[in-house]
Image (cartoon, helix red, strand yellow):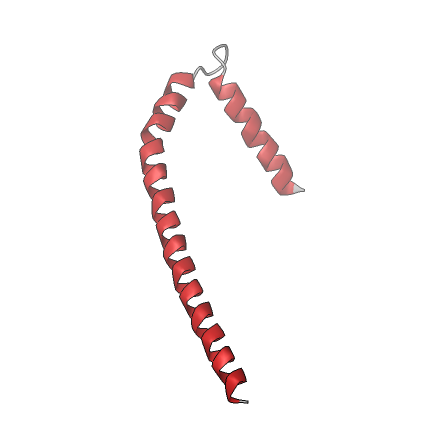
Length: 76
């Protein structure tokens, strides 16, 4: 319950900060978003590479296990 209230307060502050009639931080917010977009894109790209490499590794291990299971069945 506390986390919901804190979340709502932070969202309300964000809206108030961006409104031109209140704090008018809209230019600073846009500058921040422009600045963090390339860094965020690079970070997400690195995560995607790591996930892709792990997926390829898992598929190779699954193929090895399948081959081992098939050879075990043939020996019976």
